[in-house]
Image (cartoon, helix red, strand yellow):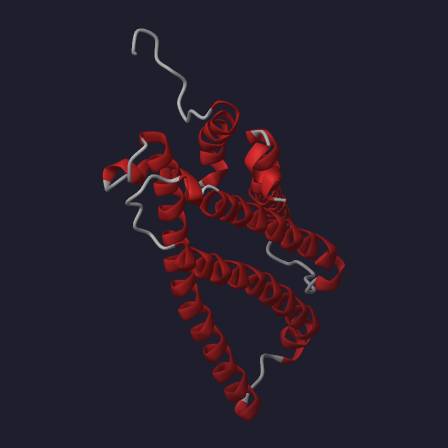
Length: 234
């Protein structure tokens, strides 16, 4: 699997990374089209529309498919980061001061968070699909059930918020580690500060960065050079 990430062409990795974004744009376009149709119907009928809440289970296949794309896209990014940071670590010059053991832990946290988000989306949609039609007819939970629901929601939100902060910190460490790895190999000395920033940003926004970083990796594996030699420079 590592060989796949190291030797694949940029477009091969771009496809799974970009699919969730492209599909989300399609869904947004479909949603806005539905809103426009509803608005036109309101205007032509003088504001009287026979509205009933749609059965969300009819749309489950779309959401579950999107969650799957999210998982594939996220795991592709994590797999690429893991491969660059782990498999090329033995090629960095002496003095590279970031710890591979810490990188492995932060990658694990990022993976767990991604899977957790996908599971939460699946369970959350299933819960709404089951209960939302009843809420539109009978009103939301009230009294004791309402308090229980609200407290449960706050707990889940708090856990997700804290987990998101931790995962973001881990992701920052991941891309800094990968950026420093690539730049250090390129310079043949431990990269510092501003030397790392560009590569770290490209690793974070991999949907763009894969087009610039992956050719460098391919070339390095083929020739031992990260950059093409400049004409007139010895």
